[in-house]
Length: 194
Length: 204
Length: 192
Image (tube, chains in turn cyan, brown, red):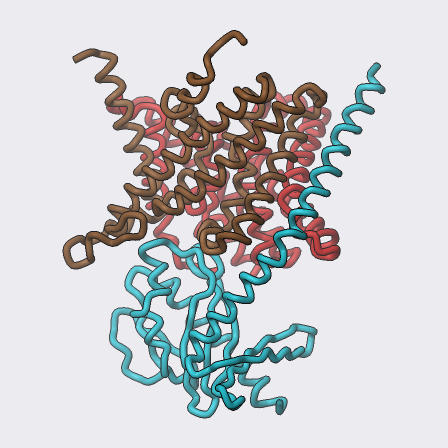
């Protein structure tokens, strides 16, 4: 009797596991194209928002030593001329990772824009990193020698921004993430030829 | 069937046995995602879906599952529905899915859902189980929306994302949208409800 | 080095209970006395550490390798549930006195969202194995700390004259709110 019982337990559990696995696999198959499409559409929107002059873009994938793949988006105008580069970067914010898209103009050594792609910051405070008042500071910001931040003071130099009151951690996270990735991107774009 | 009518099964979740206010179930999401009304609503609806679906399933299979393995089976069913809800949100409503972030998968651990499966759906036929899930889910959503509204009004002078008190007339109480504000708001809300309840009991 | 930072961050700055609202149910339900708080905290820390290790292995060697992200929630929760069951059986065999003192709290650990939260956060943040371990232990220590502080305050509260309407859950929530405020003082000290 006891054996029969454990056999039944095993049977029921395994049966359910298989059914659940199969249903989820099907659902994933069904939803995946849509999820992927959403992701790409969002990436596109972000690229065009940080590279305003761009009409089209192409993705450059560069494998660094150690196998890490770095994706850089090259923005082009209608004539196919390069107008700037964009890249994704992320860093730990106040509650979770903040992911941002950054646009740069290589010739003028300036940022062309910044857009927050993903974040879970506190509504009303950290969410201000998405607001125009904060993001506009990055337009035309010099990224060399590196981007600096000031608390509660107006920027004095061309490579400085002012952090948001009440959201210092979120603001600093963005600047740090930018600086970190910028180094790698510049190395790739200027170091290794095309 | 003996016992309460279907109507009573539905209504009890809204007030008398409200999951958050009375049964103290599902506190984590109630506190975590109620920082704005819209987030509270989305989370409430996602939970409602999982609750009704898993109640239905559990009720359907209640006779074939040996009692020793019922908890793992229920958890598996709940996790499956949560994954479905998560995929669905990601595909259809990417913005909301991003705002709720890692709290959607945590519906799995919402003791409300496992609690209803164990205490209600595993002992009742399908129809009452669905009704019970609906009532509990709506009661849960209601609390989340109210909490979200209170915190949003005081914390950012807005309601459903619509700012009606600009920063020039009203200094937002930052604490309300921070974690501490969630505890304080829910504590006060429960206090007020108890107070009203006490008044009623004692008569005018 | 990052492992140490992650440990401190999970234990203090980004305390699971007070900053992420994970594990609220036991935090409010089982924190009436310091002693039960300690026991519950230790049992949870133990399960959290094991969970961190096992779910990391599952995630890396099965889910990522075979590209099965949609099975994540199901496998994680089943891993946790079986782990709790195993721990329960092990403790019952090896130390009946400890088993008695933990008693009913053990099975409750399964539905502690702090544990599933831990597993999800570690996969979301792409921690390495050592970092995951530090995260698990840190999260557990932070949880225990919050439980013990709460237990201590509630023991004192029994002698306080709490307004009638606030007795029970409401005053506990208000206290938790104050605690969360206090822990906010650590915010921003570390960012990992």
